[in-house]
Length: 391
Image (tube, rainbow, N blue to C red; front, top):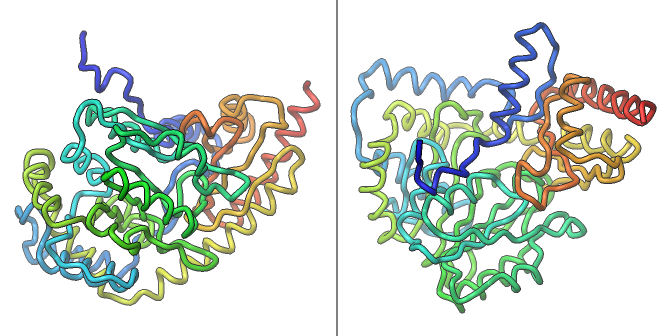
């Protein structure tokens, strides 16, 4: 069969592929510790789930406005603005079934064939996929491991061109847990203004920051008129399966999202949105407690990795991922990831699942219990010891 060029080289996200392999091993009776998938390991908070159940019970199961129910759009505008010291209107808010449609659909609205899009590498695989599907040219920019995975500014400047139409940022970032400094954001903002291009700021992990604050490029002069903020409920509120995300963008672009949503997904489930409304307006103590729990898990994971010979892991500032350098082990990261799954029962991802610049790294999610993290570290250490002995 012949397929369109935009899907010929489109690949499944690495985390889902490894999850499927891990689950197949579990079906054979193997005990697998899951460090591959980026989702909290606990249930959606009870008040949020009950709000969704009540919405279903009271008939909130029909079509609704494609951009989202007005009450949720209003609450999101107020909440996002308060957290960033800005003022947004509900008309700037677009609700979607997950954050991923908001990584895809705005690109369809602003890009033409021949346009170039700068994005981080290593970075979330959907960025490159969305750029290709939109018919534009992906331009990866490396992150600087020596600066805790901040953007490599000299490389960024080299890749900016008259064809640059959009710049994608992710802070805190997946897979590194790194954040972008204010100096970096100011530099990117100047470039965006000079070249009259858009910026997409993926801030899905903005509530999972462990030291200090992470600035948003939206707050910088002139950027509100050209920035697409992407966020969602999956990470903060353990709502991965609810599929609820949102974007904040200039009103003219938000208006163009309506037909794109209508013709792709129709609308986001009403009961999911009412659950999201409770998440935003309800108590935040559990979300804060979970952030503190991830902080403790991060310390156990990173300190444990750095105690294993041949592994060097910077301390991530946010999200729930560790991205250790394993080059000194002398094996390709893909081979190491397969080896640790097959021999040690540890599901994790090779850095190259996130782009060519992830070479020599592994990604481990610490969205698991401290007990399981400690057990995983012991297994990884023993497996690598055996690997050295076998050599």
